Image 1 (tube, protein in one colour):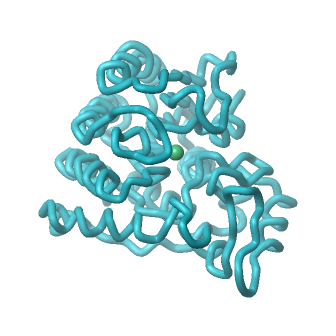
Image 2 (cartoon, protein in one colour):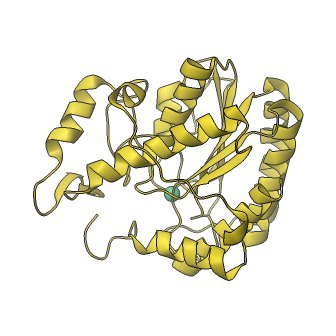
Image 3 (cartoon, helix red, strand yellow):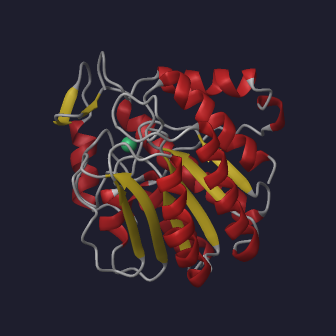
Length: 292
Ligand SMILES: [Zn+2]
């Protein structure tokens, strides 16, 4: 995304360093993500939009799609592989090879709408994974859990009105992208949290709103838009979650998955910009996924 941009390559280094330091790396199976195919991406993005993103890919330097979101010569390739990671993880979960998976990918995806890149996102990785689960594996009910501090407007836009997808989310409000309060769909359970909210408010939202909605929906697969920028140390927002809150919500999601989805949970990295907090939070999230 360019120099001094918070969505930086060091984020993935911070995660892998911390997984090693926490003693978790030896318990993981690592997979190399293939690029998503055009057909897989077209399940959620329009052909003209994909052409535009491909056409915007520069041979040198940076091309800004919006003030926050740029492509360098390698970004398009990274975006295809980020989406392909979630598709592959869905296949692994559905085949039973891995019940749970974490996709350590960049760029993130949940702000990308059907025909619009924004907020560091080019392709909506989790949405592409959910559509793959429905189209290829024939699932009728997929839940997307989004605990990134920013509202997942892209995922909401893509799946509003689609009975195959339940979205449950929490996000700081007001904060970029300044929406998510007014969706009337019963399958879009968006819970805004005031700046300064911490674990108590977050857990109350999950227990009071998310879990009943998921129990009622009985998802056959759960995808997580796993952003860690609601952490108290994150520089881009003002919520006060801790590693313990991420471990807790992961356990709660896993419990729903065990009951309804044969334990299948595919989590994909979204935000999280304080490098130390990101690494520590992902480690606790992955610790729960591994021990599931
Ligand atoms: Zn975010």
